[in-house]
Image (tube, rainbow, N blue to C red; front, side, top):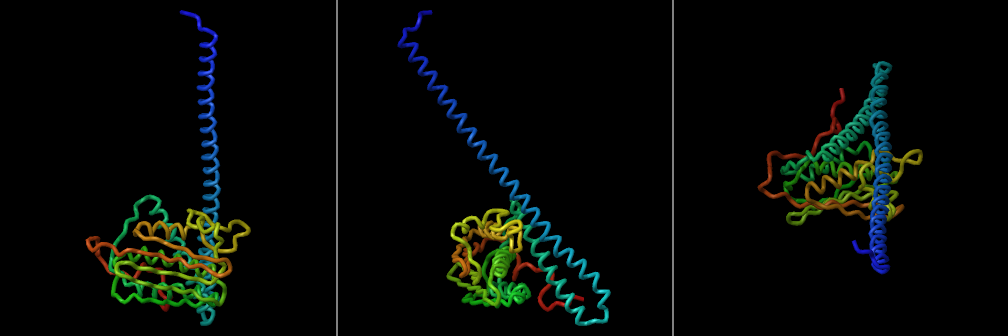
Length: 294
């Protein structure tokens, strides 16, 4: 084998040096990516741990209250006012528990990909009136008035009424949670041809501009731990976004700190060829307003 000249040797060394540098750069890039993935996994683990902690509280607290309140009935068997008061407290706690569990179950179905639209002829005005009644007891506790302004004059709108019910229920629950006491929540409905727009507007604490893209993140809450001043488990807006995507719609947010927020969902009417097997006003909670509790 012929010996390499000095120039050839230098050229070969330079070529190998560049190859080694390229491999090193690739390894460094890969290491950085692995570190980034590891950080995201750690953050996800932390977020899920916090989520599970929140879930435990959101379930245990009303459940413990229901058990305790039920036990106290024996001390008020001849006290009508006491029984009425305890009945209302049990209703409130059962409503919250049912609402939280329903969100958790739907989130699990969305995560598994098993949830599919069930198209029906939905009575939009009836659905919203039903929701207003269901959440009245929560609004009353803060002196909040819920008003509905609708120009929807048709009998029905083809969509998944149960999922629409849950979407608006989560928006309404959030609006009540973050509203100022003795304020108002407006539900505004507009319909044009095959489009339906529902806006839920509150006059509360508002959302910072930097946080407005984070609120839809799964398990994400803008407050947590000892600084967490509001209820919930960080699923509501994620469920809203996923359900609207499932129904091929969109959502818009307008918010200003200390002024309030308005969430507007826009849905296209489902094709007539899709399953129209039932007529719904929305899914049912454990109790309807005015139902006999005993």
